[in-house]
Amino acid sequence: MKEEFLKRIEEIVTRSGYECVHVEIRTDFGRMKVQILIDSLGGINVDDCETVSRHVNKFLDDNPELPELDKGRYYLEVSSPGVERPLYSLGDYERFQGREARLRLGKFIGDRKNFTGVINAVRDDNIELETDGGMITIPFEIIKGGNLVYRFEDENENDSKKSRSKRKGSRKK
Image 1 (cartoon, one colour):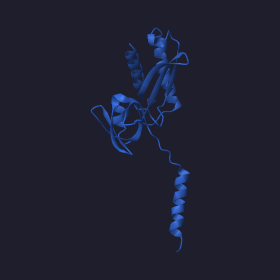
Image 2 (tube, helix red, strand yellow):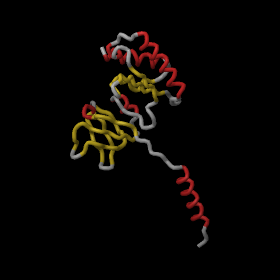
Image 3 (cartoon, one colour):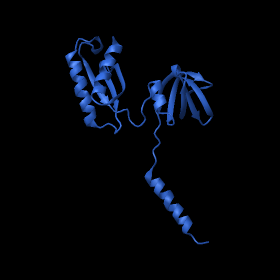
Image 4 (cartoon, helix red, strand yellow):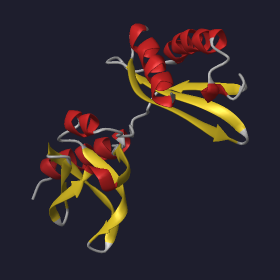
């Protein structure tokens, strides 16, 4: 029943013109929470979240008898996955091959449960991750959570490096 409910919400998001990254129903501070992460090629803004929220709210209001809604008492959260986008499926790992990711595992590989590296490939339900220690193969089934890694480049730092470089080149010996 819950899977059907989540699938219907995903369809609403898709019909609204957005990618449905993830839908989750959970109890948060004693209240039912329906959390939806959406994305699009141009990114997501507040208007996009409001649009999806209106469509999903209408569906939820029209179906208060759904057991997933705890007798109609819930709150809805629609947001962007952010720059450190969570990775939920094998398809996510395939889509973001070549990008850096941070993985948290449910079981140890060697003496570690956390890895950061570049997603090299997805083969036979395994993620190949290029880390500082070399290539590691991680079974998808033991991944508790994964997300992309965003490296912020400070523009001022780059500008000061360029300035120092120019000054060094212009010095007389």
